[in-house]
View 1 (cartoon, one colour):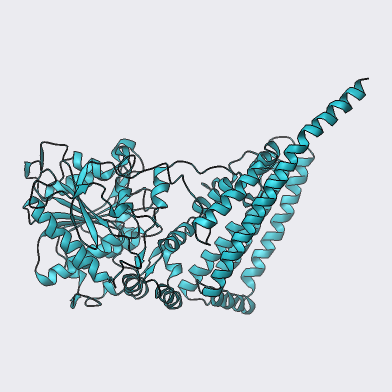
View 2 (cartoon, helix red, strand yellow):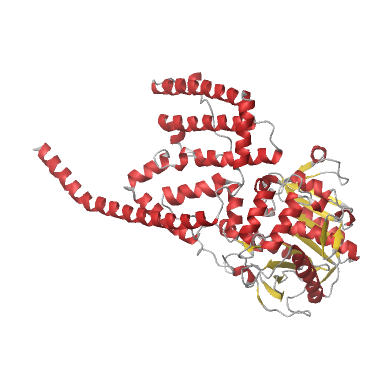
Length: 608
Protein backbone atom coordinates (compact mmCIF):
# COMPACT_ATOMS: atom_id res chain seq x y z
CA UNK A 1 0.00 0.00 0.00
CA UNK A 2 2.82 2.33 0.90
CA UNK A 3 4.70 1.70 -2.37
CA UNK A 4 1.57 2.37 -4.41
CA UNK A 5 1.06 5.65 -2.53
CA UNK A 6 4.68 6.66 -3.09
CA UNK A 7 4.44 5.80 -6.78
CA UNK A 8 1.20 7.74 -7.09
CA UNK A 9 2.71 10.76 -5.35
CA UNK A 10 5.78 10.51 -7.55
CA UNK A 11 3.70 10.37 -10.69
CA UNK A 12 1.64 13.33 -9.53
CA UNK A 13 4.82 15.29 -8.80
CA UNK A 14 6.21 14.39 -12.23
CA UNK A 15 2.96 15.46 -13.82
CA UNK A 16 3.02 18.81 -12.00
CA UNK A 17 6.69 19.33 -12.89
CA UNK A 18 6.12 18.59 -16.57
CA UNK A 19 4.60 21.96 -17.52
CA UNK A 20 7.41 23.75 -15.64
CA UNK A 21 10.04 21.67 -17.40
CA UNK A 22 8.41 22.29 -20.77
CA UNK A 23 8.22 26.03 -20.06
CA UNK A 24 11.86 26.06 -18.95
CA UNK A 25 12.92 24.25 -22.14
CA UNK A 26 10.91 26.62 -24.30
CA UNK A 27 12.36 29.71 -22.58
CA UNK A 28 15.86 28.34 -22.87
CA UNK A 29 15.38 27.53 -26.55
CA UNK A 30 13.99 30.97 -27.37
CA UNK A 31 16.73 32.77 -25.45
CA UNK A 32 19.41 30.62 -27.07
CA UNK A 33 18.08 31.29 -30.56
CA UNK A 34 17.86 35.03 -29.91
CA UNK A 35 21.39 35.07 -28.49
CA UNK A 36 22.73 33.09 -31.47
CA UNK A 37 21.09 35.40 -34.01
CA UNK A 38 22.32 38.54 -32.23
CA UNK A 39 25.88 37.27 -31.88
CA UNK A 40 26.18 36.02 -35.45
CA UNK A 41 24.69 39.15 -37.04
CA UNK A 42 26.91 41.54 -35.13
CA UNK A 43 29.98 39.32 -35.28
CA UNK A 44 29.70 39.13 -39.08
CA UNK A 45 29.56 42.94 -39.27
CA UNK A 46 32.61 43.27 -37.05
CA UNK A 47 34.68 40.75 -38.98
CA UNK A 48 33.98 42.53 -42.24
CA UNK A 49 35.22 45.87 -40.89
CA UNK A 50 38.02 45.13 -38.39
CA UNK A 51 41.35 43.42 -38.10
CA UNK A 52 41.66 39.88 -36.78
CA UNK A 53 44.56 41.04 -34.60
CA UNK A 54 43.57 44.48 -33.21
CA UNK A 55 46.24 44.44 -30.50
CA UNK A 56 49.08 43.40 -32.81
CA UNK A 57 49.90 40.47 -30.55
CA UNK A 58 50.37 37.78 -33.20
CA UNK A 59 53.92 38.80 -34.06
CA UNK A 60 54.91 38.89 -30.38
CA UNK A 61 53.64 35.33 -29.86
CA UNK A 62 55.46 34.15 -32.98
CA UNK A 63 58.72 35.71 -31.76
CA UNK A 64 58.17 34.14 -28.34
CA UNK A 65 57.69 30.68 -29.81
CA UNK A 66 60.85 31.07 -31.88
CA UNK A 67 62.75 32.16 -28.79
CA UNK A 68 61.52 29.12 -26.85
CA UNK A 69 62.49 26.90 -29.78
CA UNK A 70 66.04 28.28 -29.64
CA UNK A 71 66.24 28.33 -25.83
CA UNK A 72 63.80 25.73 -24.48
CA UNK A 73 65.22 25.62 -20.94
CA UNK A 74 62.54 27.86 -19.40
CA UNK A 75 59.68 25.85 -20.93
CA UNK A 76 61.28 22.56 -19.87
CA UNK A 77 61.80 23.76 -16.31
CA UNK A 78 58.22 25.02 -16.07
CA UNK A 79 56.83 21.73 -17.36
CA UNK A 80 59.01 19.66 -15.04
CA UNK A 81 57.70 21.67 -12.10
CA UNK A 82 54.15 21.32 -13.39
CA UNK A 83 54.35 17.52 -13.67
CA UNK A 84 55.92 17.23 -10.21
CA UNK A 85 53.21 19.40 -8.67
CA UNK A 86 50.49 17.54 -10.55
CA UNK A 87 51.70 14.31 -8.98
CA UNK A 88 51.59 15.94 -5.56
CA UNK A 89 48.04 17.09 -6.30
CA UNK A 90 46.99 13.51 -7.13
CA UNK A 91 48.51 12.35 -3.86
CA UNK A 92 46.82 15.18 -1.96
CA UNK A 93 43.42 14.43 -3.52
CA UNK A 94 43.75 10.67 -2.94
CA UNK A 95 44.66 11.34 0.67
CA UNK A 96 41.54 13.45 1.11
CA UNK A 97 39.39 10.76 -0.52
CA UNK A 98 40.83 8.22 1.87
CA UNK A 99 39.90 10.43 4.81
CA UNK A 100 43.33 11.54 6.03
CA UNK A 101 43.06 13.12 9.51
CA UNK A 102 43.34 16.89 10.07
CA UNK A 103 46.91 18.00 10.68
CA UNK A 104 48.35 15.45 8.26
CA UNK A 105 50.94 17.20 6.02
CA UNK A 106 49.43 15.45 3.02
CA UNK A 107 46.32 17.59 3.59
CA UNK A 108 48.17 20.83 2.81
CA UNK A 109 47.13 22.21 -0.61
CA UNK A 110 49.77 22.05 -3.31
CA UNK A 111 48.99 25.60 -4.44
CA UNK A 112 46.89 28.41 -2.99
CA UNK A 113 45.24 31.36 -4.77
CA UNK A 114 47.02 34.68 -4.48
CA UNK A 115 45.87 37.01 -1.73
CA UNK A 116 42.95 39.11 -2.90
CA UNK A 117 41.85 36.68 -5.63
CA UNK A 118 38.12 36.63 -4.87
CA UNK A 119 37.21 34.07 -7.52
CA UNK A 120 37.59 31.26 -5.01
CA UNK A 121 35.67 32.69 -2.05
CA UNK A 122 32.91 30.05 -2.21
CA UNK A 123 33.71 27.51 0.52
CA UNK A 124 33.17 24.55 -1.86
CA UNK A 125 36.38 25.49 -3.67
CA UNK A 126 38.20 24.27 -0.56
CA UNK A 127 35.81 21.92 1.19
CA UNK A 128 34.54 19.93 -1.80
CA UNK A 129 37.27 17.53 -2.95
CA UNK A 130 36.27 17.63 -6.62
CA UNK A 131 36.11 21.42 -6.86
CA UNK A 132 39.31 21.76 -4.84
CA UNK A 133 41.05 19.51 -7.36
CA UNK A 134 39.67 21.54 -10.28
CA UNK A 135 40.83 24.77 -8.64
CA UNK A 136 44.35 23.60 -7.91
CA UNK A 137 44.72 21.98 -11.34
CA UNK A 138 43.85 25.30 -12.95
CA UNK A 139 46.22 27.26 -10.70
CA UNK A 140 49.09 24.87 -11.49
CA UNK A 141 48.43 25.13 -15.23
CA UNK A 142 48.23 28.92 -15.01
CA UNK A 143 51.52 29.11 -13.16
CA UNK A 144 53.20 26.83 -15.67
CA UNK A 145 52.09 29.00 -18.60
CA UNK A 146 53.10 32.22 -16.85
CA UNK A 147 56.53 30.81 -15.91
CA UNK A 148 57.06 29.74 -19.52
CA UNK A 149 56.21 33.19 -20.84
CA UNK A 150 58.41 34.90 -18.24
CA UNK A 151 61.28 32.72 -19.38
CA UNK A 152 61.14 33.98 -22.97
CA UNK A 153 64.34 35.77 -23.94
CA UNK A 154 65.35 38.19 -26.71
CA UNK A 155 62.06 40.11 -26.81
CA UNK A 156 61.80 43.91 -26.60
CA UNK A 157 60.48 45.05 -23.21
CA UNK A 158 57.13 46.23 -24.56
CA UNK A 159 56.60 42.98 -26.48
CA UNK A 160 57.36 41.05 -23.29
CA UNK A 161 54.79 43.15 -21.38
CA UNK A 162 52.16 42.63 -24.06
CA UNK A 163 52.91 38.92 -24.18
CA UNK A 164 52.49 38.58 -20.41
CA UNK A 165 49.37 40.75 -20.36
CA UNK A 166 47.45 38.96 -23.09
CA UNK A 167 48.57 35.56 -21.83
CA UNK A 168 47.02 36.49 -18.50
CA UNK A 169 43.83 37.51 -20.30
CA UNK A 170 43.68 34.01 -21.82
CA UNK A 171 44.43 32.35 -18.47
CA UNK A 172 41.74 34.39 -16.70
CA UNK A 173 39.20 33.53 -19.40
CA UNK A 174 39.90 29.80 -18.98
CA UNK A 175 39.29 29.82 -15.21
CA UNK A 176 36.80 27.15 -14.06
CA UNK A 177 34.87 29.90 -12.27
CA UNK A 178 33.67 31.12 -15.68
CA UNK A 179 31.92 27.89 -16.70
CA UNK A 180 28.56 26.67 -15.37
CA UNK A 181 29.54 23.04 -14.75
CA UNK A 182 32.80 23.82 -12.91
CA UNK A 183 31.62 26.67 -10.67
CA UNK A 184 30.01 25.29 -7.49
CA UNK A 185 27.95 28.43 -6.89
CA UNK A 186 26.48 28.21 -10.39
CA UNK A 187 25.85 24.45 -10.08
CA UNK A 188 23.89 25.02 -6.84
CA UNK A 189 21.90 27.90 -8.35
CA UNK A 190 21.06 25.85 -11.46
CA UNK A 191 19.82 22.88 -9.42
CA UNK A 192 17.88 25.03 -6.97
CA UNK A 193 16.25 27.17 -9.69
CA UNK A 194 15.76 24.43 -12.28
CA UNK A 195 17.92 26.31 -14.75
CA UNK A 196 15.99 29.56 -14.55
CA UNK A 197 19.24 31.35 -13.71
CA UNK A 198 20.67 30.28 -17.09
CA UNK A 199 17.54 31.43 -18.91
CA UNK A 200 17.74 34.82 -17.20
CA UNK A 201 21.45 34.91 -17.93
CA UNK A 202 20.93 34.33 -21.64
CA UNK A 203 18.37 37.10 -21.73
CA UNK A 204 20.81 39.41 -19.93
CA UNK A 205 23.48 38.44 -22.46
CA UNK A 206 21.27 39.34 -25.43
CA UNK A 207 20.35 42.65 -23.78
CA UNK A 208 24.00 43.55 -23.24
CA UNK A 209 24.94 42.58 -26.81
CA UNK A 210 22.22 44.85 -28.16
CA UNK A 211 23.25 47.64 -25.78
CA UNK A 212 26.84 47.33 -27.01
CA UNK A 213 25.73 47.36 -30.66
CA UNK A 214 27.40 44.04 -31.38
CA UNK A 215 30.13 44.20 -28.74
CA UNK A 216 29.45 42.63 -25.38
CA UNK A 217 28.98 45.53 -22.99
CA UNK A 218 28.45 43.84 -19.64
CA UNK A 219 26.13 45.81 -17.37
CA UNK A 220 27.98 46.57 -14.12
CA UNK A 221 25.11 48.33 -12.38
CA UNK A 222 21.52 49.36 -12.98
CA UNK A 223 21.75 52.43 -15.27
CA UNK A 224 18.37 53.64 -14.00
CA UNK A 225 19.39 53.56 -10.33
CA UNK A 226 21.19 56.91 -10.46
CA UNK A 227 20.32 60.33 -11.81
CA UNK A 228 22.84 63.14 -12.01
CA UNK A 229 21.96 65.98 -9.67
CA UNK A 230 19.63 63.80 -7.59
CA UNK A 231 21.66 60.97 -6.04
CA UNK A 232 25.08 61.52 -7.65
CA UNK A 233 26.83 64.82 -8.44
CA UNK A 234 24.64 66.59 -5.88
CA UNK A 235 26.90 69.34 -4.50
CA UNK A 236 24.98 72.63 -5.03
CA UNK A 237 26.37 74.97 -7.67
CA UNK A 238 25.79 76.62 -11.02
CA UNK A 239 27.13 76.51 -14.56
CA UNK A 240 28.63 80.00 -15.03
CA UNK A 241 30.36 79.60 -18.40
CA UNK A 242 30.32 77.31 -21.40
CA UNK A 243 31.83 76.96 -24.86
CA UNK A 244 32.11 74.12 -27.36
CA UNK A 245 34.70 72.36 -25.17
CA UNK A 246 33.34 72.48 -21.64
CA UNK A 247 30.95 73.88 -19.07
CA UNK A 248 32.45 75.58 -16.00
CA UNK A 249 30.78 74.78 -12.70
CA UNK A 250 31.07 77.08 -9.69
CA UNK A 251 29.96 75.55 -6.40
CA UNK A 252 27.96 77.35 -3.73
CA UNK A 253 29.87 78.17 -0.54
CA UNK A 254 29.07 76.52 2.80
CA UNK A 255 31.17 78.91 4.90
CA UNK A 256 30.82 82.63 5.58
CA UNK A 257 34.38 83.28 4.40
CA UNK A 258 36.42 81.61 1.69
CA UNK A 259 40.05 81.58 0.68
CA UNK A 260 40.86 84.51 -1.57
CA UNK A 261 42.41 82.36 -4.29
CA UNK A 262 39.81 80.29 -6.16
CA UNK A 263 40.52 76.63 -6.94
CA UNK A 264 40.07 75.33 -10.51
CA UNK A 265 39.89 71.55 -11.06
CA UNK A 266 40.68 70.12 -14.50
CA UNK A 267 39.53 66.47 -14.62
CA UNK A 268 40.42 63.99 -17.37
CA UNK A 269 38.21 63.97 -20.45
CA UNK A 270 38.63 60.20 -20.72
CA UNK A 271 35.82 60.00 -18.17
CA UNK A 272 33.49 62.39 -16.37
CA UNK A 273 34.24 64.81 -13.56
CA UNK A 274 31.70 63.54 -11.03
CA UNK A 275 34.04 60.85 -9.76
CA UNK A 276 34.99 63.75 -7.47
CA UNK A 277 31.35 64.30 -6.50
CA UNK A 278 29.63 60.91 -6.34
CA UNK A 279 27.72 61.35 -3.10
CA UNK A 280 28.09 63.69 -0.13
CA UNK A 281 29.93 61.12 2.01
CA UNK A 282 32.76 60.68 -0.51
CA UNK A 283 32.63 63.94 -2.47
CA UNK A 284 35.98 65.73 -2.70
CA UNK A 285 34.22 68.77 -4.15
CA UNK A 286 31.85 69.01 -1.18
CA UNK A 287 34.77 68.58 1.24
CA UNK A 288 36.77 71.34 -0.44
CA UNK A 289 33.79 73.69 -0.32
CA UNK A 290 33.41 72.93 3.40
CA UNK A 291 37.09 73.84 3.93
CA UNK A 292 36.43 77.30 2.53
CA UNK A 293 37.56 76.96 -1.09
CA UNK A 294 35.74 78.61 -3.98
CA UNK A 295 35.68 75.56 -6.23
CA UNK A 296 35.39 75.62 -10.02
CA UNK A 297 35.31 72.38 -12.04
CA UNK A 298 35.62 71.83 -15.78
CA UNK A 299 32.94 69.53 -17.22
CA UNK A 300 34.23 68.47 -20.65
CA UNK A 301 32.03 67.97 -23.70
CA UNK A 302 31.40 64.46 -25.03
CA UNK A 303 32.33 64.57 -28.74
CA UNK A 304 30.21 63.02 -31.46
CA UNK A 305 30.51 62.96 -35.25
CA UNK A 306 28.50 66.18 -35.36
CA UNK A 307 30.43 68.05 -32.65
CA UNK A 308 34.01 66.76 -33.01
CA UNK A 309 35.06 69.53 -35.44
CA UNK A 310 38.74 68.56 -35.71
CA UNK A 311 39.44 69.08 -32.00
CA UNK A 312 43.17 68.77 -31.25
CA UNK A 313 45.18 68.45 -28.04
CA UNK A 314 46.02 72.14 -27.99
CA UNK A 315 42.31 73.01 -28.13
CA UNK A 316 41.98 71.47 -24.67
CA UNK A 317 44.61 74.00 -23.58
CA UNK A 318 43.47 77.11 -25.48
CA UNK A 319 39.70 76.60 -25.40
CA UNK A 320 39.88 74.57 -22.20
CA UNK A 321 42.26 75.59 -19.41
CA UNK A 322 42.97 79.11 -20.70
CA UNK A 323 39.28 79.80 -21.25
CA UNK A 324 38.44 78.37 -17.82
CA UNK A 325 41.04 80.61 -16.12
CA UNK A 326 39.63 83.66 -17.89
CA UNK A 327 36.14 82.70 -16.73
CA UNK A 328 37.26 82.17 -13.12
CA UNK A 329 38.80 85.65 -13.12
CA UNK A 330 35.55 87.17 -14.41
CA UNK A 331 33.48 85.25 -11.86
CA UNK A 332 35.62 86.16 -8.84
CA UNK A 333 37.59 89.25 -9.81
CA UNK A 334 40.78 87.35 -8.91
CA UNK A 335 43.53 86.82 -11.47
CA UNK A 336 45.56 84.54 -9.18
CA UNK A 337 44.32 81.00 -8.70
CA UNK A 338 45.21 77.48 -7.60
CA UNK A 339 44.72 74.73 -10.19
CA UNK A 340 44.39 70.93 -10.16
CA UNK A 341 44.91 68.41 -12.98
CA UNK A 342 43.74 64.80 -12.64
CA UNK A 343 45.30 62.02 -14.80
CA UNK A 344 45.38 63.23 -18.43
CA UNK A 345 44.11 66.53 -17.04
CA UNK A 346 47.41 66.70 -15.14
CA UNK A 347 49.38 66.00 -18.32
CA UNK A 348 47.45 68.83 -19.98
CA UNK A 349 48.11 71.04 -16.95
CA UNK A 350 51.87 70.48 -17.16
CA UNK A 351 51.76 71.28 -20.88
CA UNK A 352 49.73 74.43 -20.23
CA UNK A 353 52.02 75.63 -17.41
CA UNK A 354 55.03 75.18 -19.71
CA UNK A 355 53.19 77.17 -22.38
CA UNK A 356 52.35 79.86 -19.80
CA UNK A 357 56.03 80.03 -18.79
CA UNK A 358 56.97 80.85 -22.39
CA UNK A 359 54.19 83.47 -22.51
CA UNK A 360 55.19 84.90 -19.09
CA UNK A 361 51.66 84.30 -17.81
CA UNK A 362 51.87 83.96 -14.01
CA UNK A 363 48.20 83.67 -12.98
CA UNK A 364 48.63 80.14 -11.60
CA UNK A 365 50.14 80.38 -8.11
CA UNK A 366 50.05 76.67 -7.22
CA UNK A 367 49.52 73.49 -9.21
CA UNK A 368 48.33 70.10 -7.96
CA UNK A 369 48.71 66.90 -9.95
CA UNK A 370 46.47 63.90 -9.19
CA UNK A 371 48.07 60.63 -10.47
CA UNK A 372 49.40 62.48 -13.49
CA UNK A 373 52.11 61.34 -15.91
CA UNK A 374 54.62 63.80 -17.36
CA UNK A 375 57.37 61.24 -17.94
CA UNK A 376 55.87 58.35 -19.94
CA UNK A 377 59.00 56.16 -20.06
CA UNK A 378 57.17 53.61 -17.89
CA UNK A 379 53.51 54.27 -18.62
CA UNK A 380 52.02 51.36 -16.69
CA UNK A 381 49.67 48.66 -17.89
CA UNK A 382 48.18 50.82 -20.65
CA UNK A 383 51.49 50.59 -22.51
CA UNK A 384 50.44 47.12 -23.73
CA UNK A 385 48.00 48.87 -26.05
CA UNK A 386 50.64 51.27 -27.39
CA UNK A 387 52.89 50.65 -30.35
CA UNK A 388 53.08 52.15 -33.82
CA UNK A 389 51.02 49.36 -35.41
CA UNK A 390 48.20 49.60 -32.86
CA UNK A 391 48.09 53.39 -33.00
CA UNK A 392 48.04 53.34 -36.82
CA UNK A 393 45.17 50.88 -36.78
CA UNK A 394 43.34 52.98 -34.20
CA UNK A 395 43.82 56.10 -36.31
CA UNK A 396 42.36 54.29 -39.30
CA UNK A 397 39.33 53.16 -37.31
CA UNK A 398 38.78 56.71 -35.95
CA UNK A 399 39.05 58.22 -39.42
CA UNK A 400 35.44 57.74 -40.45
CA UNK A 401 33.69 59.10 -37.35
CA UNK A 402 36.36 61.56 -36.22
CA UNK A 403 36.43 60.17 -32.69
CA UNK A 404 37.23 57.07 -30.65
CA UNK A 405 34.12 55.50 -29.21
CA UNK A 406 34.31 55.63 -25.43
CA UNK A 407 33.07 52.06 -25.16
CA UNK A 408 36.32 50.87 -26.72
CA UNK A 409 38.34 52.89 -24.24
CA UNK A 410 36.24 51.54 -21.38
CA UNK A 411 36.81 47.95 -22.53
CA UNK A 412 40.57 48.51 -22.58
CA UNK A 413 40.55 49.85 -19.02
CA UNK A 414 38.37 46.95 -17.86
CA UNK A 415 40.87 44.47 -19.31
CA UNK A 416 43.49 45.80 -16.89
CA UNK A 417 41.43 44.23 -14.07
CA UNK A 418 39.56 41.57 -16.00
CA UNK A 419 38.67 39.32 -13.07
CA UNK A 420 37.10 42.19 -11.14
CA UNK A 421 35.64 44.24 -13.99
CA UNK A 422 34.72 41.59 -16.56
CA UNK A 423 34.52 38.03 -15.31
CA UNK A 424 32.87 38.72 -11.95
CA UNK A 425 30.00 40.45 -13.78
CA UNK A 426 29.93 37.74 -16.43
CA UNK A 427 29.34 35.17 -13.69
CA UNK A 428 26.79 37.28 -11.81
CA UNK A 429 24.78 38.43 -14.85
CA UNK A 430 24.94 35.44 -17.19
CA UNK A 431 25.66 32.30 -15.17
CA UNK A 432 23.78 33.22 -12.01
CA UNK A 433 21.20 35.26 -13.93
CA UNK A 434 21.21 38.08 -11.37
CA UNK A 435 20.72 41.78 -11.86
CA UNK A 436 23.86 43.86 -11.34
CA UNK A 437 24.30 45.57 -8.00
CA UNK A 438 23.50 49.24 -7.43
CA UNK A 439 26.84 51.02 -6.97
CA UNK A 440 27.63 54.68 -7.69
CA UNK A 441 31.28 54.06 -8.64
CA UNK A 442 30.30 51.42 -11.21
CA UNK A 443 27.64 53.74 -12.62
CA UNK A 444 30.36 56.36 -13.16
CA UNK A 445 32.72 53.73 -14.60
CA UNK A 446 30.08 52.78 -17.17
CA UNK A 447 29.42 56.39 -18.16
CA UNK A 448 31.91 56.47 -21.04
CA UNK A 449 33.11 59.44 -23.07
CA UNK A 450 34.37 59.66 -26.65
CA UNK A 451 37.85 60.88 -27.65
CA UNK A 452 38.37 63.33 -30.57
CA UNK A 453 40.49 61.53 -33.18
CA UNK A 454 43.19 64.16 -33.77
CA UNK A 455 43.59 64.87 -30.05
CA UNK A 456 43.83 61.18 -29.20
CA UNK A 457 46.35 60.46 -31.93
CA UNK A 458 48.54 63.40 -30.81
CA UNK A 459 48.34 62.29 -27.18
CA UNK A 460 49.19 58.65 -27.84
CA UNK A 461 52.09 59.40 -30.19
CA UNK A 462 53.66 62.36 -28.39
CA UNK A 463 53.20 61.15 -24.83
CA UNK A 464 52.96 57.35 -24.68
CA UNK A 465 54.86 56.32 -27.80
CA UNK A 466 57.63 58.95 -28.08
CA UNK A 467 57.66 60.50 -24.58
CA UNK A 468 58.20 63.94 -26.11
CA UNK A 469 56.93 65.94 -23.14
CA UNK A 470 60.16 65.11 -21.29
CA UNK A 471 62.27 66.62 -24.06
CA UNK A 472 62.76 70.42 -24.04
CA UNK A 473 60.98 71.63 -27.16
CA UNK A 474 59.75 68.11 -27.91
CA UNK A 475 56.08 69.20 -27.94
CA UNK A 476 54.75 72.25 -29.76
CA UNK A 477 51.40 73.75 -28.79
CA UNK A 478 49.93 76.90 -30.34
CA UNK A 479 53.19 77.32 -32.29
CA UNK A 480 55.18 77.36 -29.03
CA UNK A 481 57.84 74.74 -28.27
CA UNK A 482 57.35 73.98 -24.57
CA UNK A 483 59.76 72.89 -21.83
CA UNK A 484 58.32 71.57 -18.54
CA UNK A 485 61.59 72.34 -16.71
CA UNK A 486 60.65 76.03 -16.97
CA UNK A 487 57.61 75.50 -14.72
CA UNK A 488 58.46 77.40 -11.52
CA UNK A 489 55.02 77.17 -9.91
CA UNK A 490 54.95 75.44 -6.47
CA UNK A 491 53.50 71.99 -7.12
CA UNK A 492 51.85 69.22 -5.11
CA UNK A 493 51.95 65.70 -6.55
CA UNK A 494 49.67 63.03 -5.13
CA UNK A 495 50.13 59.54 -6.53
CA UNK A 496 48.79 56.13 -5.52
CA UNK A 497 50.91 53.21 -4.43
CA UNK A 498 48.91 50.56 -6.30
CA UNK A 499 48.18 52.65 -9.40
CA UNK A 500 48.73 50.58 -12.56
CA UNK A 501 47.55 53.34 -14.92
CA UNK A 502 49.93 56.06 -13.70
CA UNK A 503 52.62 54.16 -11.73
CA UNK A 504 53.79 56.27 -8.83
CA UNK A 505 57.50 55.90 -9.63
CA UNK A 506 56.78 57.31 -13.09
CA UNK A 507 54.80 60.24 -11.68
CA UNK A 508 57.76 60.83 -9.33
CA UNK A 509 60.13 60.99 -12.31
CA UNK A 510 57.78 63.51 -13.92
CA UNK A 511 57.65 65.63 -10.78
CA UNK A 512 61.43 65.92 -10.81
CA UNK A 513 61.34 67.47 -14.27
CA UNK A 514 59.65 70.63 -13.01
CA UNK A 515 61.76 73.65 -12.08
CA UNK A 516 59.83 74.81 -9.00
CA UNK A 517 59.40 73.46 -5.47
CA UNK A 518 57.57 70.13 -5.39
CA UNK A 519 55.82 68.35 -2.54
CA UNK A 520 55.43 64.69 -3.47
CA UNK A 521 52.93 62.59 -1.50
CA UNK A 522 52.12 58.91 -1.99
CA UNK A 523 48.66 57.67 -1.11
CA UNK A 524 47.49 54.10 -0.64
CA UNK A 525 45.29 52.08 -3.01
CA UNK A 526 44.91 52.75 -6.75
CA UNK A 527 44.11 55.29 -9.45
CA UNK A 528 40.60 56.09 -8.19
CA UNK A 529 40.38 55.01 -4.53
CA UNK A 530 43.78 56.55 -3.84
CA UNK A 531 42.37 59.96 -4.81
CA UNK A 532 38.74 59.62 -3.70
CA UNK A 533 39.72 58.85 -0.11
CA UNK A 534 37.64 61.04 2.24
CA UNK A 535 38.99 61.66 5.75
CA UNK A 536 35.87 60.25 7.45
CA UNK A 537 36.78 56.75 6.26
CA UNK A 538 40.31 56.89 7.71
CA UNK A 539 41.59 54.44 5.10
CA UNK A 540 44.78 53.63 3.19
CA UNK A 541 47.13 56.22 4.71
CA UNK A 542 49.79 58.24 2.89
CA UNK A 543 53.55 58.72 2.82
CA UNK A 544 55.43 62.01 2.96
CA UNK A 545 59.17 62.25 2.28
CA UNK A 546 61.89 64.90 2.22
CA UNK A 547 61.08 68.23 0.55
CA UNK A 548 64.17 67.98 -1.61
CA UNK A 549 63.42 65.02 -3.82
CA UNK A 550 66.19 62.39 -4.14
CA UNK A 551 67.25 61.24 -7.58
CA UNK A 552 65.10 58.11 -7.66
CA UNK A 553 61.77 57.07 -6.19
CA UNK A 554 63.14 54.18 -4.11
CA UNK A 555 65.49 56.49 -2.22
CA UNK A 556 62.61 58.88 -1.58
CA UNK A 557 60.36 56.12 -0.23
CA UNK A 558 63.04 54.88 2.17
CA UNK A 559 63.01 58.33 3.80
CA UNK A 560 59.23 58.71 4.02
CA UNK A 561 57.02 58.78 7.07
CA UNK A 562 53.65 57.06 6.90
CA UNK A 563 50.54 58.86 8.15
CA UNK A 564 47.11 57.40 8.83
CA UNK A 565 43.96 58.33 6.96
CA UNK A 566 43.47 60.62 3.98
CA UNK A 567 46.00 62.92 2.33
CA UNK A 568 43.28 65.53 1.76
CA UNK A 569 44.12 67.38 4.97
CA UNK A 570 47.81 67.51 4.09
CA UNK A 571 46.95 68.99 0.70
CA UNK A 572 44.57 71.59 2.19
CA UNK A 573 47.28 72.66 4.64
CA UNK A 574 49.76 72.98 1.77
CA UNK A 575 47.29 75.10 -0.22
CA UNK A 576 46.64 77.45 2.69
CA UNK A 577 50.39 77.87 3.24
CA UNK A 578 50.62 79.25 -0.29
CA UNK A 579 48.08 81.93 0.65
CA UNK A 580 45.71 81.93 3.64
CA UNK A 581 43.99 85.29 3.00
CA UNK A 582 40.19 85.11 3.15
CA UNK A 583 37.31 87.11 1.73
CA UNK A 584 33.54 87.02 2.05
CA UNK A 585 31.94 83.94 0.49
CA UNK A 586 31.20 84.18 -3.23
CA UNK A 587 27.89 83.02 -4.64
CA UNK A 588 27.78 81.63 -8.19
CA UNK A 589 26.37 84.22 -10.56
CA UNK A 590 27.18 87.21 -8.35
CA UNK A 591 30.24 88.21 -10.40
CA UNK A 592 30.53 89.20 -14.03
CA UNK A 593 29.40 85.70 -15.09
CA UNK A 594 25.74 84.97 -14.54
CA UNK A 595 24.40 81.52 -13.72
CA UNK A 596 23.35 79.54 -16.78
CA UNK A 597 21.86 76.46 -15.13
CA UNK A 598 22.19 74.31 -12.03
CA UNK A 599 25.15 72.02 -11.49
CA UNK A 600 26.07 69.45 -12.69
CA UNK A 601 25.00 71.00 -16.00
CA UNK A 602 23.90 69.37 -19.24
CA UNK A 603 27.25 68.47 -20.84
CA UNK A 604 27.84 65.72 -18.29
CA UNK A 605 24.44 64.14 -18.88
CA UNK A 606 25.22 63.06 -22.45
CA UNK A 607 25.67 59.28 -22.45
CA UNK A 608 26.89 57.06 -25.28
